[in-house]
Length: 308
Ligand code: 3HC
Picture 1 (cartoon, protein in one colour):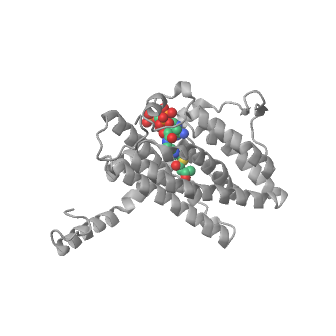
Picture 2 (tube, protein in one colour):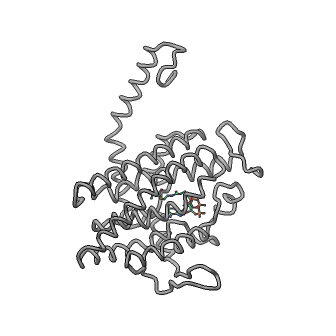
Picture 3 (cartoon, rainbow, N blue to C red):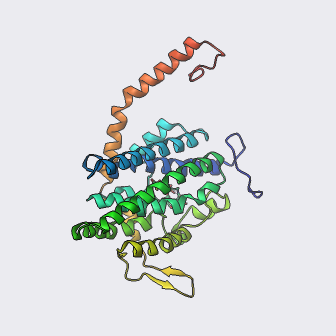
């Protein structure tokens, strides 16, 4: 680690490192999968064929991100089915941001701009995270997240050049998503139990507050170019610091949302549980097919799933 070399699956590692990696990667994977829901609800209501095609592709990308991440967790000995069970049973977390409702199509644009923008700020440094499979998954994910961010911004720009009602919808969505987006970076450093150890292990490369500041600095000029205001009276440029000063989100709200009491928590998990139950027959059919194919291929011929 001191030489900045990557840790690979077969390397020895402290139990705490393995546990922390599984925790973070699983939470991240769950976030991608649950994150399909708020925007997925708008696929059937997209205003044009072009917007529908873009949104479908974006939601499918999130499924792909979940898949890379569950695979990365499996390299540490975790079992994907077990991780999903823990999510559904409320024993593992997923990002707070996906527990808020999407009220209009402008929310799709704002999620792209702010939520994917925050995700990029957080995840680009994770491309240099110390665990190899996670860092490599992150490179691919970040490329796709950049596209997501741009499509959101382009959608908002189009709406801002539209009717007064469309501009109102954008501003309303910005007002609702701004504070939850700042919360995505986690609690303030002084209240973050995991940051110090994760920085020492080079899992995290920056603290929660550093990344939140970077996000605010990046977003303020974009808001000005769009013509929207950010709902924070304390937001202003600080010449001395060379950064924007900004207000604090409601940290009690973050605690409530993380502990399962956000506006949409129950609905998100119910839907995930139903999807898991509805998909059970597909998983068992796929497993049976893999066994049959590997038997038919015979030993040593590299059948689909080996001796599965
Ligand atoms: N939502 C839910 N839980 C959160 C949270 C949030 N916004 N912020 C922090 N937490 C949880 C932590 O996971 C930790 O839980 P645990 O110790 O009980 O497992 C606890 O609150 C304390 O927070 P810490 O700051 O000590 O925790 P971390 O050091 O793990 O930092 C993190 C939190 C910055 C979110 C970090 O885990 C991280 O960078 N994770 C990878 C990125 C990620 O998961 N992103 C998901 C959101 S976006 C996305 O992926 C979808 C995209 O398409 C938009």
